[in-house]
View 1: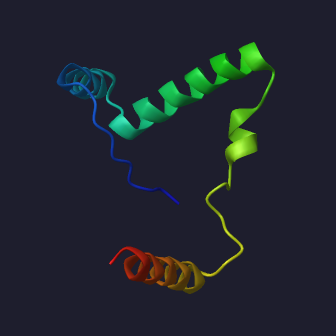
View 2: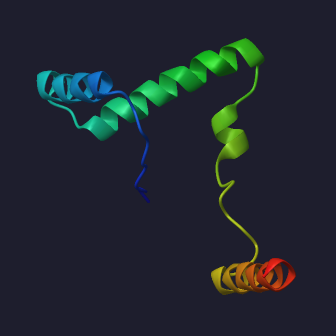
Length: 84
């Protein structure tokens, strides 16, 4: 499943990404994915670690979303009582 990523980058890189996308006739997504894959491979070569395998699924949690929301709300209410 694809996810939306938001990052602040210099305008020059945004323009360069758009130009590469037009010139190579590929999506910006594909350019970014390929660049990240190359960067990860370079890092892994220096460390001997597979960063993608180590972090893949890191966002998955055993708790249900509702449990996380309730826990966050409870902690927020407790903090408001303590500091309010």
